[in-house]
Length: 274
Ligand code: KMH
Ligand code: ZN
Image 1 (cartoon, rainbow, N blue to C red):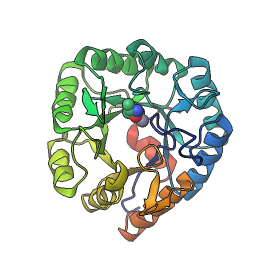
Image 2 (spheres, rainbow, N blue to C red; image 1 turned 180 degrees about the vertical axis):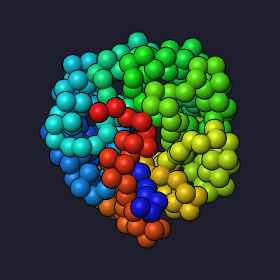
Image 3 (cartoon, helix red, strand yellow; image 1 turned 60 degrees about the horizontal axis):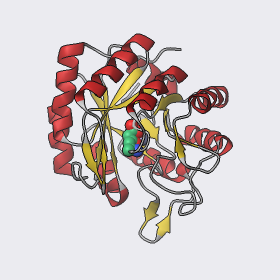
Image 4 (tube, rainbow, N blue to C red; image 1 turned 120 degrees about the vertical axis):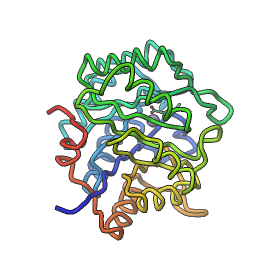
């Protein structure tokens, strides 16, 4: 089998308002429908943020559990819950996300300016979250918003060992105002600094989404796309559904001779249980 591209879809996020972006999946039904479409188009992992009945971001434990169950029942996707949540979420709630027993969770490797806000990930929080992933056998995806976070990832692995599953997988989140820029030379610098043997995907926020997608494919990386990261498909053209972004990513990956990776292969690569 030739090389393939792991495609992660991040369909919702915590930043866009449903009122501004009507196509954003915010109910459980909308999320499951989106996930099914994206799986059919080539996604293997779904990075999940959920909303409450008023479409506001929430980390409600029972909703998270129901979401994991519903996604498992309706799709074969690897379910990755966000532990980043919204910038206002307390650390305790973010740690408790793991009690919903997802396949994977995000783990951001440091604090970063985030537009006009600050996305808080102090070292002690990172360590506590990492140790919980190891105890609860959840595979972490290390989210890296800048090069200093790559150094913190090395420190985490040096001091606390390998993740559950034995494999290090990272996601470069580029183009956040306050984080690393979303361009090819920064992507190469970040990739060169990653731990030996790590695999990685990249995503570019907003207008950096396509430059980062092409740079990631050129550099042999995997892809994350979705309305968490961009709500504009092309200039003046809003995204109408997450599947549009997954289809575009899958086409670009096929053109690069590295078609979308089946979820079963992704499970083996990432060391996910089940
Ligand atoms: N919503 C951002 C503050 C993650 O999912 O772990 C954090 C975020 C990263 O989206
Ligand atoms: Zn997220």
